[in-house]
Length: 312
Picture (cartoon, rainbow, N blue to C red):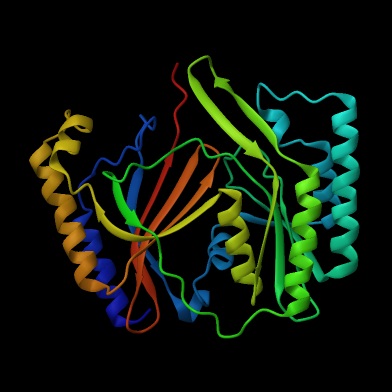
């Protein structure tokens, strides 16, 4: 680890030496917040694929098994209001098979991943990723449900300005994406709406989405964003509105909580020219990283994990 990374980590440890409250809406049990570092020399380049691998969230599986799982709709059958008749199921099964046949004949180096934390009880439907003849990558994924939302008053963030790609995507890649999207459109959308435990309402549109990029890592990242599982944004500040803290953290010493978070905000913005929020949502489980890149190429910042609490 480089000296600058060690210094940043040590300062964050001091700023977080007390147990700061960080409760997302409906996360009554509270979240945990801790310093985070990514040592590039040991862990490689920071990206979503490597982050998932480092956390053991990524499981390599057979492409055939993933397609079969999509056809059997095991993921969306976990929703209480799921209901399709035999004809609808047969049509969806056949169209997913058509999608698979096209992917299987059009892409090379096909792989499939399931993403899940150790305590996650809902099986992720899996993604399929492959390389095109133009040496680009295409990733295909069903959409997934996120139980939680993060108010701007809690974590203020804004859209991240996209950096220009080093090279343009190939014409064959763009044509493949167009065909995949057309087949996916025929598979259709399953609209789910109901409630859990008679208390928490949900709404989810389940469909097949896809993304293309020049690298495998970026293709997976873009597909997870399209699926609803991943959010990447520019970080602005934590809990910078004292009135919001008064309303949501009234059991705590409000002024102390406010000042502690302002100290964190000040340090992060002084230490990094650009701060990014990576949010990976596994149904009710939230994993949030607020990080910036050091001058030496490492990444450092804060990690939060929290779980939606069903307390009817």
